[in-house]
Image 1 (cartoon, rainbow, N blue to C red):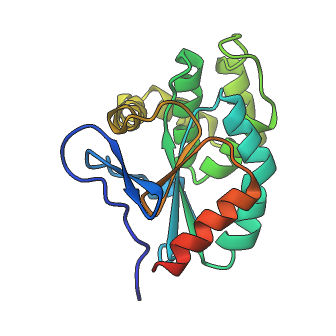
Image 2 (tube, helix red, strand yellow):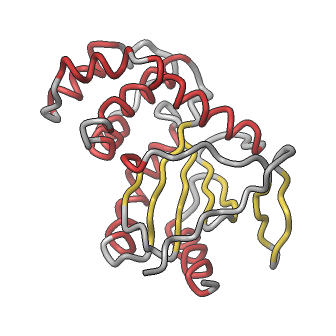
Length: 207
């Protein structure tokens, strides 16, 4: 069985766009190991879409609510696309707090429902709404073991994972969120569904 492609980042140096057929390909530092609990779709999918996101980012929320559900429906169930989430909580401490909570949910197999719940209601950036009570409330609604959820949020390893991925995004030179690597090719911003479909189909045809 073939496996999904792993984007090529190179091994050293800052990220630079490299034109390939008119579309930049991101090169740079090797990525930190991604937690499979933050993947969605088949490991053998021919196209891998990595999203660098922030749970306070309005453009990330727009993508999550407007475009991603259709991409999941069209491509994930068909085994064409595997989504990988990468934390880039650059907006502030509430972003990091939410990212840590989502990873704690991931340890109970609930990353994607937690991800969707965080984006279902967007608050003003750094407004104080993404506090402990709110994040625990989502976990309770999803039926998580709350003692384990709280312990996993306190685990220094969870915070280290988030910060490692943020450092990776910064080393790649990502200027904001959302940013996507589609089989290693950069697509930046909350683009239209048509643009995502075209990028996915191009990546698929090049396999």
